[in-house]
Length: 167
Image (cartoon, rainbow, N blue to C red):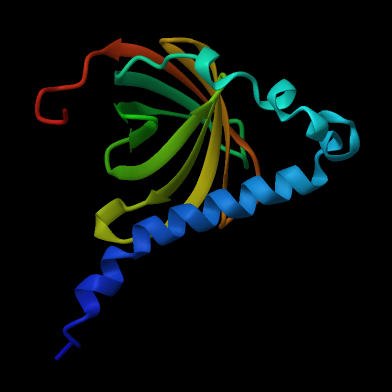
C-alpha cells in the first residue's frame, strides 16, 4: 500500500521539473553570455527590451514542423498555445502519440518554455525551448532535452482558434 502523501509528491513533479529546466538552461546561458561583461548589465532594459513593448502571441492551434537534433528527419504535429495573464501554456501533439506540456514566459519577442514529455502518462523527458516571435502567428524556435544535450528546431504557424474544450 502506498503512503497517503504520494499524490502530493506526484503533483509536484511537473512544476519542479519545469522550474529546474528553466533555471538550468537560463542560468547556464546567462553565465556564458558575452553580455555579462559587455556593459549590458548596467542597462538591462537594453538587453531584455521593454516589457510593455512585448510581442503578442495569438492563442490557438499551431502547425508544427520540426527537425530533431540527431538527423535531418523532420517531424510534424500541432501545438496548442493558451495565455493566462503573462504565462503561456503549451501542449505539443507530435505524430500519433507523443504529448508534451510546458509553461513559458514572454520577454520582448522571446518565448522561453520549459517542457516535459508525458507520453503514455509517464514523464519520459524534459527540456527547454526558446521561440523567437516573428509575428503574432509565427514562432521559430530551438529546443534541447535533458536526455541529449543537442539542439533541435521548430517552426510554428497559427492555424485556428483554440477549441472551446481547452479554453
